Amino acid sequence: MDGPPGTGIVSVRHALVVVGGNPPDGIADLPAADLVIAADQGAEHAMALGLVVDVVVGDLDSIYPDTLAGLEAAGTLIESHPTDKDETDLELALATALDAGATSATIVGSASGRLDHALGILLVGAGDRWSGLRIDLRIDAARAWIVRDHLQIDGRPGDVVSLLAVGGSATGVTSTGLRWRLAAATMSPGVAVGLSNLMTETTATITLTGGTLLVVQPGREDA
Image (tube, rainbow, N blue to C red):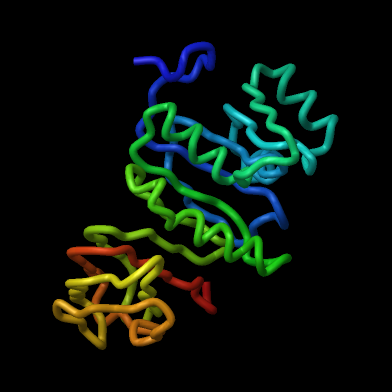
């Protein structure tokens, strides 16, 4: 099944969305994707990671003109938007993923550079608008997940895992494989009860019955 008329995008299951800003550092083992979407300057970061960019979307105020021209000549779809717009380039990229039929997406970016941009990546990803996408994030060497129902994390004993409620209370939060376990707990935004938990096994699980959690697994210092 094809995507929206005129786009040439084939319906996909998993999309990689690479954002702009500072280039990500420590990215490894990205999942296979049916569609690679770059948000503006994210196209340059994607190519540096060895990815073939299918779509570039945004106001195109950050990407080098020569890079953009080369991508267009290679057949990459370019979706240009006005600079004065109500959506960030990341939001436009996630909308493209949804329109293409994606059911999951990995957002790739960096926490270096501007703090508001780094926070924006996390908070945009957790927005209710994207509840139809199962979203995980690679922010430099860290991994994060937007969790609305359940999550299984693979790691090793001693790995740090933080649970943060976003957008409202998260209810029925239950965990296994973590040192400080939760059982049908209610977690509120701004309360750090889930911060800096530790894995006790090679697998941890997190489930919840309502709300949204941002689950973060920071990069290992010895990695």
